[in-house]
Image 1 (tube, helix red, strand yellow):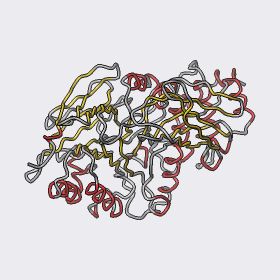
Image 2 (cartoon, helix red, strand yellow):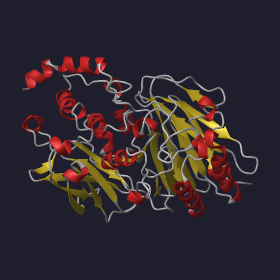
Image 3 (cartoon, one colour):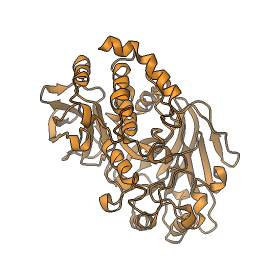
Image 4 (tube, one colour):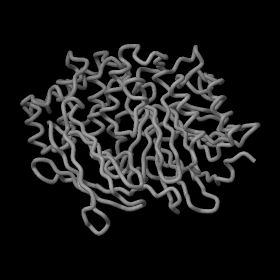
Length: 475
């Protein structure tokens, strides 16, 4: 069987080149890559190219040919571990198994003493995934962990993390972020580069994978499986808290706008459910009643507001967020007491955005101004804007006549090959190769700071800008 799969692999390559399965064919994994080189064509054949548009691993894992692959490659996990929702006292571990399985996680302190245990059952209902929450941890502490199933301990690499500091604790918090991460075999080593920076968290800001077929959940799932099986990605996700919002290419298709109805078009809720299966965010909009991917979380003295600019977008009616999400964002900003507030968007905030604002916040000027005016009028200090979508890194100053200058940091070329031209209106604009953004916060000092860096796929810093908290407040 395996010899057949390897010898037939060029057939799959030809298939994707010749058949219009999606706007852009997938970049295939070389057949000689361990595990994924052999598993990927099986996923293409039995899920992605099957007639069932709601196909999933949960529906086909019992096939003998799949179980043979699992046995051959000793696959105890089929995705993960992925950390998320890390606080000063708890954390969540997400994972996927190749069959329904009870998984236990055990946490160890720096002395190697077990301090917390929890378990969960992966199920077909959630496409063989589980989210395991561990509690009783201490702030700003480095922990290691192990996972176990019915066979015993599962071998893991880089299974460690640091909890968040307490809000009033002196600490340095480092995060990486970006968008534009089409699965791209030659560029997947960027996840190792990011892991080497030892970030506390990574924020995916959309176009995290390029599906472009919202009615084909089978394709969407296979694209997630491929990324989650990459050892480089596992290296990062096992030790870094992961949070994600979507943009057009992983929500719908190019420049997509979902409209104000929570349940129409019919593909919106199913796409949202696939998204929920594959991320472990603290929240997903307002749940089944009002779906979406927006949420907020705190990490030390920083509040994060992760927005959804696609599910309810309707530029003809002047909205990026829809009424419920806008109400949530405005209220959350007013209530925040954090030193820094980071508002994340899948698309640009600047008034000089590409396409004249047709696919950015400048296309909904009134709603954008409503958010910025609240910051001005309520004297909400410490706001940082981050965004993605354009295949470059930009830094913008958004001047506010009745408030302080807002800084926007945009980056969206993690693994993509395609490049967008630089912007003369930005104070920094860079598009060479691949890269990611980094924000480093220093809290608990007299004048806290945030430093932005643009770092290349090779780990080279090409730009740095530091801001003091005193610069980010209305005088």
